[in-house]
Image (cartoon, rainbow, N blue to C red; front, top):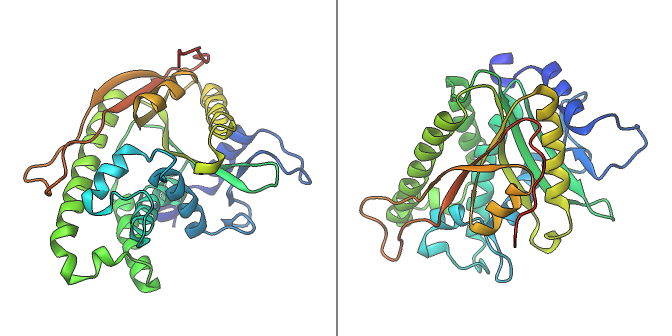
Length: 290
């Protein structure tokens, strides 16, 4: 079963590196969202609820910027940040599961951690994975993608975009943009992180909790773990604002690119700038002009 679920002992070791020693009765600001001992989500959480927190942080609101890469994937049909139909939320939640679950379950070393606010509520989520032999996507990981799709269909939570025959053309456009993203991210990931490294797959803060230090707490925890292993960290982000945020944690831009597709949907152009960023082990946080 390790083929499908990874190595639980190595996962426990990774959580220990990230979180440090925590007393059982403590309610730490940075916490594991998956109980490795019990083999289930932390109390009060589910895979779906964690994916929804990630989605809310990524999809944006009328007063908070979205992740511009996912915004581009949504296209002009789903570009309303107020999400009047709720379909934007459903689609982004599904995307979060496709990214999160292989890191969480399939990989030998993957972790999902959260940052709590003063009331103990999860306000931010970070998904990280350790590649000990460089980046690659294996057969077992592809099976997780299929498993996620099947699970959502059986649960009745698959977005109507993927089940409504009247939306076939729209689905084709969304999938075309998604395919380009997956291909380009994989290409540059392999190019700029060819050896062992930590990969920050997702970092999302709830819109109304942004600017309160949650991203900083989670990123510094990942940096400490990577430094313990003497490994670099790699991530992708969009927007000048986010690039500067990660530069404050010691990350440096190693590549910049945009995404586009042939025969784009009417009203859809190329994506915003995407930055590939790398932090060498021991790289200290730096001051970046706002």
